[in-house]
Image (cartoon, rainbow, N blue to C red):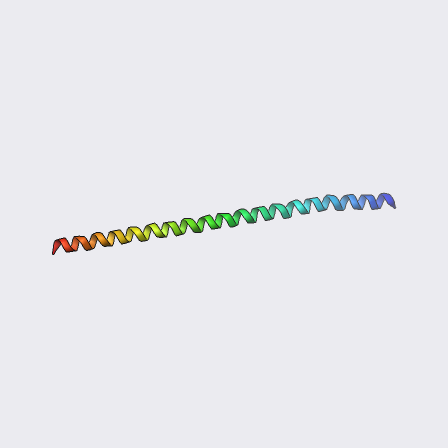
Length: 70
């Protein structure tokens, strides 16, 4: 009986360690994915800002060219 209880306790502790490791790995992966998403959003915002600035500069150049041609 004592051997069976010790075996069950040992099996439960081994299974618990695996479960803890799996949960820890999943949490680490989720944190990494969240960081990747945050970086992607920052990159997207920076690209949009640069495109807006380029469009504004092009519009100003067009306006200047139109004024010169008049």
